Length: 351
Image (cartoon, rainbow, N blue to C red; front, side, top):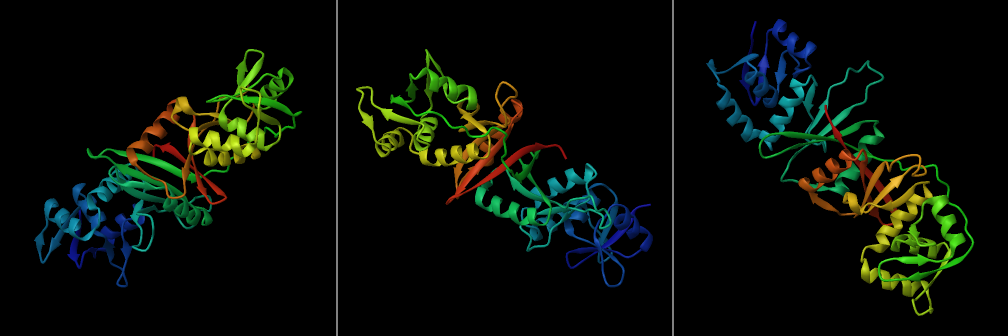
């Protein structure tokens, strides 16, 4: 039996209780008004009409799919993006509903009020031509995390295909404690620091996987070298044997790598949280991070350092998530906001 509805003021009203009950009680479409009639929003109505599950009339004239789509497109911002996501998730069995206009997300997935184990899921809809705003994302996640909800991002490409991401604030924790070391010295070359103190080099490499063997010594990346310089583990010398003040070292390195302060801030924070941090260059990120010794596990995370107001096209985010997924890692954006670092994880999702 097909349902019948009437278009009234941008809502489709289903009056027959038996028909409305199937949609409302079983599939969680619409809402009941004061008269007990079922009210469907235009997005729900377009979906049901496209699935041949309803006939819709206006002033006793039946509306076809094109007419209803034209009307919905005039009334609903970004209608085609929202419709494609709504249709896809409904066909996957999710009771997806439009959020109220004052909500920062586009949809939510209905969960039964009596289901104490369920978490409210909110979905933000994007076109591939939209931009990711990391600061807005952070605030959205903070607001929803406070209510124990979760966030999905749904991106529609120009062919109408969908990509879903689970987006979350990540707590970065490892189990490698920061160690103490005897003081030593390093030689500052153009792109790295070299230690020839064999005892110190061996200790740094074995305890916290600093650097990479260089003959009997150890070569350190610039960020590793600055970190150890600030920890007073090493002093820096030029190739002529001149001792270099810390400020001079940092100034020299900053000319080579202008974002070194931001990288060092994140590197130091991750070390404090018990992670081993190495370059992520071969994976297209700033760092890769291990929660334990590298001989016991692969790096779990790729970390990319970004500023507070970082924005990106979705193609770049898609590339980063896809690459991380292909090497069994998770991509995390380390957003620097003053002295605070927010770790925002994007994970591929199959709803």
